Length: 423
Image 1 (cartoon, rainbow, N blue to C red):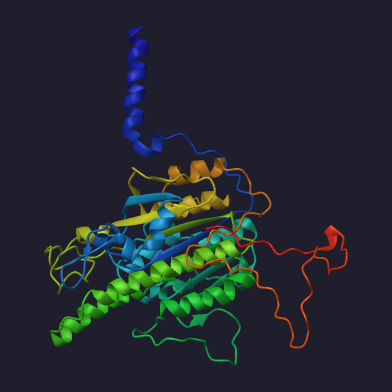
Image 2: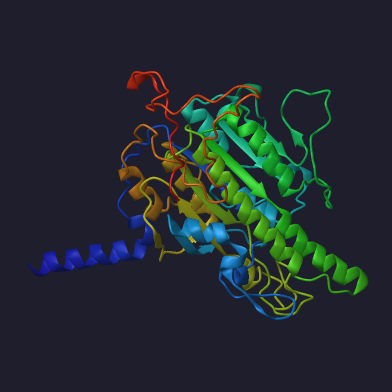
């Protein structure tokens, strides 16, 4: 008996020491052709998503003012406030490289790596999804405001038969067109386009391609923060946090518009997982000359690792089977791609991150989607009521069916417009 107790205690101690490695395996994936949309909002500071923001006059700015759509989505899915970046730099390119590959990309340590390292060094989620699901060029799409994302989205060489739709900044990998690129709003920074133009591209391309995996990047908020620091450095003037907050409000609205577009499309409605996150935070210093920075921030006198405000980020997941709750676990950027791979029903052997069980387990237990009959639950757009066609001049409208002046019409031949869905 003593030997049995000793062996049992040793086994329990070994399991606890192994941490996540000792967790039981996840059930086999069985998604019935479900889709995933990953939205990356660049540079969201902890004070803003954590509800502790203030304006230029020091007055509190409520989270519901900055992120009304994200707050609505939090009531429909899993909110993860304890996500950490996995790169040691706290800047964008290493973060996106890790997110795409599901592992730390050791050779990408800045936004300007050497030419030979300006690429993914490991298979990316987009590549694996296209290959394992047998998708065509349209089956995977990356639509981004920042140009470098299209460069780190794959391991070269990318053969034409393995390519997927990529549109970053004002360039895409479609055959050359005699028409100039379509855009509507001037951009301040090179190799980038405004989020309005990225959203416009999404509305044009996604309905005709219907990708199973869609990755969207929105970068205006981060650019407004850098513009604040740029004005401060060059002129000594206070550009202000107002513009950064406005960009966050805009991107939150665009998340809602993307959700609305998905819900209005029978291909995606009730059959799609939406995941929203950010690549890094910002310095949490109150100094107006420093809050806009990220990476190795001056205010904390840190040179060897990212500032604390840059390291802690958030994630949000909504979709079939995912319960409404706040996750207690702590996760990494590198866990996102393995999680999405499980939702799509593919393997990702080169990733070192772990699937987020609080997303994957309930999603795999969710029943397959039935016929799409429920009204689309819009967040930013009101459902459009059905308006009868206008009566041409000189033509008298027919009396209502069933009135004394109307002929008898079989009930089965009368088309009665349905009322708009209740909100």
